[in-house]
Length: 174
Image (cartoon, rainbow, N blue to C red; front, side, top):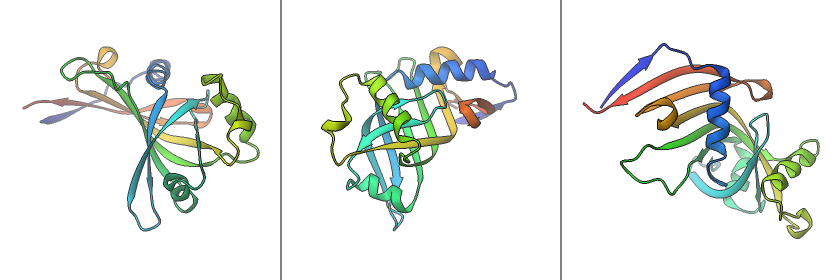
Protein backbone atom coordinates (compact mmCIF):
# COMPACT_ATOMS: atom_id res chain seq x y z
CA UNK A 1 0.00 0.00 0.00
CA UNK A 2 1.32 3.43 -0.86
CA UNK A 3 0.30 6.64 0.85
CA UNK A 4 0.39 9.87 -1.09
CA UNK A 5 -0.02 13.33 0.41
CA UNK A 6 -1.93 16.01 -1.42
CA UNK A 7 -1.21 19.70 -0.91
CA UNK A 8 -4.66 20.64 -2.19
CA UNK A 9 -6.59 22.06 0.77
CA UNK A 10 -10.24 21.30 1.41
CA UNK A 11 -12.34 24.40 2.12
CA UNK A 12 -13.73 25.07 5.59
CA UNK A 13 -17.27 25.07 4.20
CA UNK A 14 -16.80 21.65 2.58
CA UNK A 15 -15.13 20.23 5.72
CA UNK A 16 -18.07 21.44 7.82
CA UNK A 17 -20.66 19.96 5.43
CA UNK A 18 -18.92 16.57 5.27
CA UNK A 19 -18.43 16.49 9.06
CA UNK A 20 -22.11 17.19 9.75
CA UNK A 21 -23.13 14.55 7.23
CA UNK A 22 -20.82 11.94 8.78
CA UNK A 23 -21.97 12.71 12.34
CA UNK A 24 -25.55 12.37 11.15
CA UNK A 25 -24.91 8.96 9.53
CA UNK A 26 -25.40 7.10 12.82
CA UNK A 27 -26.79 7.73 16.29
CA UNK A 28 -24.16 5.41 17.77
CA UNK A 29 -20.50 6.12 18.34
CA UNK A 30 -17.55 4.13 19.64
CA UNK A 31 -15.69 5.92 22.45
CA UNK A 32 -12.09 5.02 23.22
CA UNK A 33 -10.64 5.84 26.65
CA UNK A 34 -7.52 4.88 28.58
CA UNK A 35 -7.40 3.50 32.15
CA UNK A 36 -5.04 4.92 34.78
CA UNK A 37 -2.75 1.92 34.13
CA UNK A 38 -2.70 2.65 30.39
CA UNK A 39 -5.11 -0.08 29.27
CA UNK A 40 -7.38 0.83 26.36
CA UNK A 41 -11.14 0.57 26.65
CA UNK A 42 -13.90 1.08 24.11
CA UNK A 43 -17.60 1.67 24.62
CA UNK A 44 -20.54 2.24 22.30
CA UNK A 45 -23.07 4.93 23.14
CA UNK A 46 -25.85 6.98 21.59
CA UNK A 47 -24.68 10.54 20.99
CA UNK A 48 -25.71 13.98 19.88
CA UNK A 49 -23.57 16.92 18.79
CA UNK A 50 -23.73 20.68 18.81
CA UNK A 51 -22.69 23.44 16.43
CA UNK A 52 -19.29 23.58 18.16
CA UNK A 53 -18.80 19.87 17.28
CA UNK A 54 -18.86 18.86 20.94
CA UNK A 55 -20.35 15.36 21.19
CA UNK A 56 -22.64 14.46 24.08
CA UNK A 57 -23.55 11.02 25.44
CA UNK A 58 -25.31 9.65 28.50
CA UNK A 59 -23.52 7.23 30.81
CA UNK A 60 -23.36 5.80 34.29
CA UNK A 61 -20.40 7.39 36.13
CA UNK A 62 -19.52 3.91 37.46
CA UNK A 63 -18.97 2.51 33.94
CA UNK A 64 -15.32 1.81 33.09
CA UNK A 65 -15.12 4.42 30.33
CA UNK A 66 -16.62 7.04 32.64
CA UNK A 67 -14.18 6.15 35.43
CA UNK A 68 -11.28 6.26 32.96
CA UNK A 69 -12.18 9.86 32.09
CA UNK A 70 -11.80 10.95 35.71
CA UNK A 71 -8.04 10.30 35.58
CA UNK A 72 -7.21 10.63 31.87
CA UNK A 73 -9.38 12.92 29.75
CA UNK A 74 -7.85 11.95 26.39
CA UNK A 75 -10.41 10.17 24.23
CA UNK A 76 -11.18 9.26 20.63
CA UNK A 77 -14.55 8.70 18.99
CA UNK A 78 -15.51 6.89 15.77
CA UNK A 79 -18.83 7.30 13.99
CA UNK A 80 -19.86 5.28 10.95
CA UNK A 81 -22.91 3.64 9.47
CA UNK A 82 -22.56 -0.04 10.36
CA UNK A 83 -24.80 -1.12 7.46
CA UNK A 84 -22.04 -0.37 4.94
CA UNK A 85 -20.74 -3.33 2.99
CA UNK A 86 -17.22 -4.19 1.93
CA UNK A 87 -16.35 -3.27 -1.64
CA UNK A 88 -18.76 -0.35 -1.85
CA UNK A 89 -17.93 3.31 -1.16
CA UNK A 90 -17.42 3.81 2.59
CA UNK A 91 -17.69 6.73 4.99
CA UNK A 92 -16.82 7.45 8.58
CA UNK A 93 -15.28 9.99 10.93
CA UNK A 94 -12.71 9.74 13.69
CA UNK A 95 -12.44 12.48 16.31
CA UNK A 96 -9.57 12.98 18.75
CA UNK A 97 -9.71 15.17 21.84
CA UNK A 98 -10.77 15.15 25.47
CA UNK A 99 -13.92 14.23 27.35
CA UNK A 100 -15.49 14.31 30.78
CA UNK A 101 -18.73 14.83 32.66
CA UNK A 102 -20.64 17.92 31.56
CA UNK A 103 -19.79 20.76 33.92
CA UNK A 104 -22.56 22.66 35.69
CA UNK A 105 -22.12 25.35 33.04
CA UNK A 106 -22.25 22.84 30.13
CA UNK A 107 -25.07 20.64 31.47
CA UNK A 108 -28.08 22.63 30.15
CA UNK A 109 -26.64 22.79 26.61
CA UNK A 110 -25.55 19.14 26.76
CA UNK A 111 -29.07 18.11 27.76
CA UNK A 112 -30.58 20.26 24.97
CA UNK A 113 -28.26 18.64 22.41
CA UNK A 114 -28.96 15.09 23.59
CA UNK A 115 -32.73 15.60 23.85
CA UNK A 116 -32.70 17.26 20.43
CA UNK A 117 -31.39 14.08 18.85
CA UNK A 118 -33.42 11.74 21.07
CA UNK A 119 -36.80 13.41 21.72
CA UNK A 120 -37.85 10.58 24.06
CA UNK A 121 -34.98 11.39 26.44
CA UNK A 122 -36.08 12.61 29.88
CA UNK A 123 -33.23 13.31 32.29
CA UNK A 124 -35.43 12.49 35.29
CA UNK A 125 -35.69 8.90 34.04
CA UNK A 126 -31.90 8.48 34.26
CA UNK A 127 -31.22 9.26 37.89
CA UNK A 128 -27.59 8.50 38.62
CA UNK A 129 -26.52 8.90 35.00
CA UNK A 130 -24.52 11.88 33.72
CA UNK A 131 -24.11 13.58 30.41
CA UNK A 132 -20.55 13.54 29.09
CA UNK A 133 -19.03 16.03 26.67
CA UNK A 134 -16.34 15.22 24.13
CA UNK A 135 -14.34 18.21 22.85
CA UNK A 136 -12.54 17.32 19.60
CA UNK A 137 -9.22 18.90 18.65
CA UNK A 138 -8.78 16.94 15.42
CA UNK A 139 -11.09 15.12 13.01
CA UNK A 140 -10.24 12.60 10.32
CA UNK A 141 -12.82 12.31 7.56
CA UNK A 142 -13.30 9.33 5.25
CA UNK A 143 -16.10 9.84 2.76
CA UNK A 144 -15.43 8.04 -0.51
CA UNK A 145 -18.55 9.34 -2.33
CA UNK A 146 -17.55 12.90 -1.43
CA UNK A 147 -13.72 12.83 -1.32
CA UNK A 148 -12.77 9.86 -3.49
CA UNK A 149 -11.63 6.28 -2.91
CA UNK A 150 -9.01 5.84 -0.20
CA UNK A 151 -8.90 9.56 0.66
CA UNK A 152 -8.57 10.62 4.32
CA UNK A 153 -8.76 14.32 5.21
CA UNK A 154 -7.54 15.56 8.60
CA UNK A 155 -8.65 18.91 10.03
CA UNK A 156 -8.05 20.86 13.22
CA UNK A 157 -11.12 21.91 15.20
CA UNK A 158 -10.95 25.59 16.12
CA UNK A 159 -12.98 27.47 18.71
CA UNK A 160 -16.68 27.37 17.91
CA UNK A 161 -16.32 24.20 15.86
CA UNK A 162 -14.73 25.76 12.79
CA UNK A 163 -12.52 23.34 10.87
CA UNK A 164 -9.13 24.06 9.34
CA UNK A 165 -7.67 21.64 6.79
CA UNK A 166 -4.43 20.01 7.95
CA UNK A 167 -3.65 17.31 5.39
CA UNK A 168 -5.04 14.92 2.81
CA UNK A 169 -3.72 11.37 2.50
CA UNK A 170 -4.53 9.06 -0.37
CA UNK A 171 -4.15 5.32 0.24
CA UNK A 172 -3.61 3.21 -2.87
CA UNK A 173 -2.96 -0.52 -3.24
CA UNK A 174 0.48 -1.26 -4.62
